[in-house]
Image (cartoon, rainbow, N blue to C red; front, side):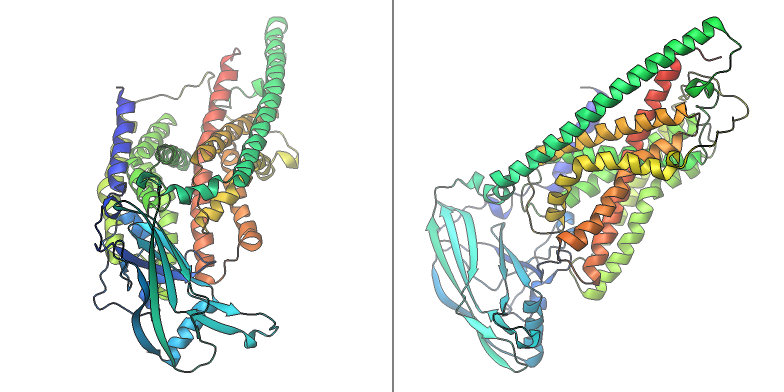
Length: 591
């Protein structure tokens, strides 16, 4: 096995161990009457997925000994807070209208429940690691134009329908009794009798296939048609773009090569024009080279992170309701790949003849983590103010800090030292002149911002259909499991980004503008800005999210995600442009 292949295998193995593909409750076999673990997780407004609260923050009947379930890092990051539930659903034991408790709700508690019902609160539980969802109550708006006339009702009877196969739990459904209601409309004390029923039914579904029910929702024919339409749309875009660029660039470059070769044979003193004219400036190192190398290093690390996440998704690690697996994978892989950022940044910085590699390494470490940390501090403060489960406990923050201090930072430094000692020299086919040529006046559309707009639009158009489903999964309750299609779209995104950046770099050089380094990075990464613009559209046109906390979480964390895309695709764009520029200047004689 090669050294690189072995390293990749080690990272994947460590991530799988960290994710700890679940084998606790779901592996249990039961006998008649055995207690089956049931945990209440959280409650919250249905349209605000980030705004969730502990189950017993609402005045439900509480069991005498409420026990918190120990949770993995990813589960805590996901906002899960599992506690023992007030229901007892023993294996194969039917129950009919079992009373949990009788409770007199005070005026304040009635107001709390009424507010929750008005905001479409849902509850979430886990029974033998199977998810249960349901709404707390309903609002009767029928025939009432004035909101003050609305009636608010709390469901007090929950019916559980549980399917089993031999000694295993296969499926559970919960439905509320529409006739067992408590009127919460008026501010007065109310007597409530909370009840539940349980009915066990046999099924032939194998235990290994019990999670397929949840993944089928995203694989329905109607949805698959849209996904394949998205892929066909993207593939057509790629084929047209690559065909157009290949034809134009090959023809233009061929003509350029013939012309320059003819010029060399006939008139050596003839003044050069076009991209050959700037051969003495095209490999002049960019301004702010420390920042440039840091951005390239961070982008390369994020590209590696995305690749590993896709590999784990394709092998089935992120199955539906594998709580917190994605968050665990993101934290662990980001920590383990920080050496890549350090090595890439330091080696490229030294190739650019930079001297202060330590400062460059600090910049690399803080370029993505810095904004992410500031965003987290603000949003965690908001969550604490709301008493939401999204607020991380102090212990979890300490764990993340230790991962950063004991894994991320040392690997970054080791990668940086290895990069500095690689002694690689920048491969430039042409010598750089002592003084830079003046760039001729260019029309407005050749400026950086118009070029970024042109560069970002095509890659974004190739992914925007798939974006809706991803947003509906991350910022909603839709389940997304078609990772193979998502991976194809990701590959298409990389190809289109590379090709459009190469094309714009050629046109820039042909206009005798030799400052292509930063331009290629910015043009490659501009798709991230389009994705953030899509966030605005999604929030206002496609979702029902509301409230300061949910709005802050949505735009705050999406800003970090889009910034990550900017760095990753910027690195891809620059690498493609660098390969192209080296190739064309290697093909001509440079004096």
